[in-house]
Image 1 (cartoon, rainbow, N blue to C red):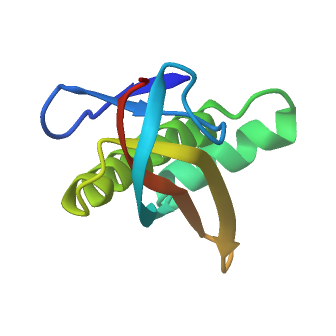
Image 2 (tube, one colour):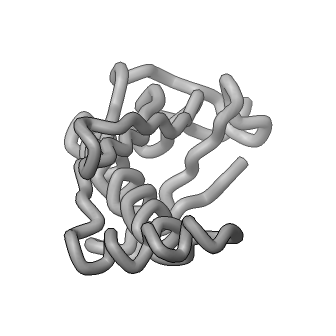
Length: 120
């Protein structure tokens, strides 16, 4: 199980797992699919610097930071979407990404929003 903390809003814990269920909680009800979507661009100046870094080989830290920030932002948006739908946890959590054109990257965090309670 992963417990994610939202970075933009309240600092409360929100249980998230890639599994089908939580071992310590019972899923009372599913509220359906929840997601958070972010589309980002590196920007011309950083893109040029990252391009030179890629030619040299090794990690391109500008892209790593951009993708880490984008994943956190998508995760925050997914948690917000889940809360709006009444969920207090997410199961079957995943990330996906794709390129849109040559300079845009789409990151989506998604899963199934659920309401969990203690096991009987």
